Length: 265
Image (tube, rainbow, N blue to C red; front, side, top):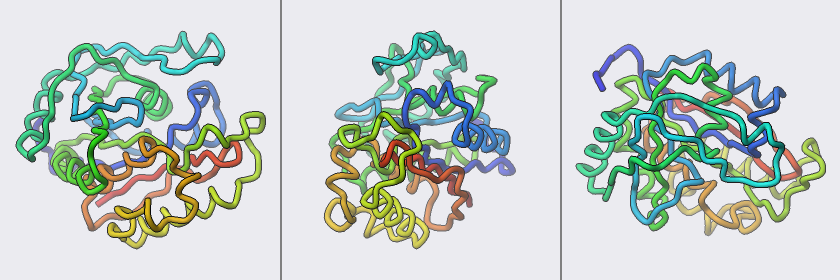
């Protein structure tokens, strides 16, 4: 990528929620669409909760296919397309940057895009013209190491790339009230989300790195870490001097956090 000093892009954490958000036109979809119109990235680098590998893999095909990694939804959802291009050159450059930073990063030209990628990008950039590169979530990494992944990717923001972590602050399918999307938020979910928001606002990385030991209701809010930890590369890509732009706030189905935000410099 060619650096363009005037197009510094934000780092974004998106709570992608249910795949059904791709078909809905409510406040969440409208908020993501409005955000998409407010930025003009030349490329998008995405780390999704739904691609986990022992080390880092980078999708490098020119036209990755969509992965419909869910079941039991309306047929319309499985017929959706998101024909944005991949970027083999950017994928290779991303791998080189991560390797230089000490990570085992390899290309994967067969990997498609899971719904943690195409659902939020469909809402943000429905024209599907911006090249997209997906990066896997390395399962053996600590929060600190994931933060370093984001630090390594930070230089791409200066070249016009949007850095996106896709997951969810509170994500516990076992406890969700699937029958009522607008159910009142459960107190434990609200308290955990509030704790995370407060620590982000305070730039308290020490607390966030140690969330598993000190955050309230963490066992219920983060029973498995894959949806929460994409927040760390986003923070790393943002650096220490950031401003928070809340894109959407809210909790659906009683406890599924939809909190989505951008960090700008």
